[in-house]
Image (tube, rainbow, N blue to C red; front, side, top):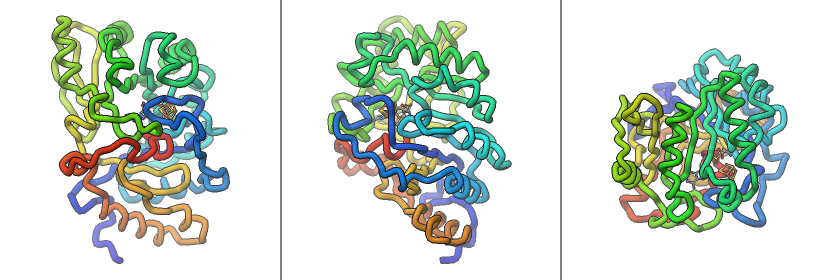
Length: 334
Ligand code: SAM
Ligand code: SF4
């Protein structure tokens, strides 16, 4: 197929500008909303893209208009030599920003090297501030390590945001504490609605704590917030706390899906291009990379896939077809 326009534009008119690269499906945590509890079926090592292959795809995508990259996983910091990959990506001149989403366990020891390699920001997942609860939600002990990691990341000059997946009955009683944490530290705390991308099949609509509910809860505690200017291509709706410090974000993937403004695509660690979190199985770029195909052939395959990017979760909600475990977050990269 020939492409009149060498841009990553889909049939709904959305243009992809951001790439999330899952560098591994492996993880040193077992968050209840993400990983299967037992018997995790990891990708075979030989099926994981090497750095040379990842860079080749990023270069092709950068030529097609990608300007921001986020490293994710699984846990990106369990991938050996990650700073080398960051260095290689930071040399691609079209890439204006590189961030990483991490569970924070490895930040304390790695933050300085990541920053030196060219990383600019980290979104750190933190679902509870109670040590006794951390293991129940995240599967391991580690609250102190994560808190120290956040501090070190900030100290070395990485821009830090905190991500909280709010699940009814698990951590929705900590919304005020997280708000106070934002006031105290000035980090943006982003509350994420639980999505059906869980390995445990626990997801149901009742467990989702919506943006509207959280705002109501804050108001009932006398905490006023005001909307900030929002870039609607970003998933987070941002608010200031009405005193001088702190900022909250809401990622309302279920109650106010943002599919119409989606500008993201994903590369999985086993080399599939996913144009949507809910796409399965995606386009096998690894096969093309390992079968000697030229950049032009790979580019053409990418442009074809983009064209057919699904409408997104918005359609699944409209057709009432959301159910648990629609995809596995640790495999696709959140
Ligand atoms: N291991 C890293 C981490 O936890 O930050 C990066 C990968 S994780 C899959 C990326 C993000 O997805 C995290 O912020 C995590 O909280 C979020 N996430 C995972 N499963 C989710 C789900 N079912 N619904 C909403 N967010 C989810
Ligand atoms: Fe691991 Fe992140 Fe999934 Fe938690 S959310 S199990 S830290 S990949």
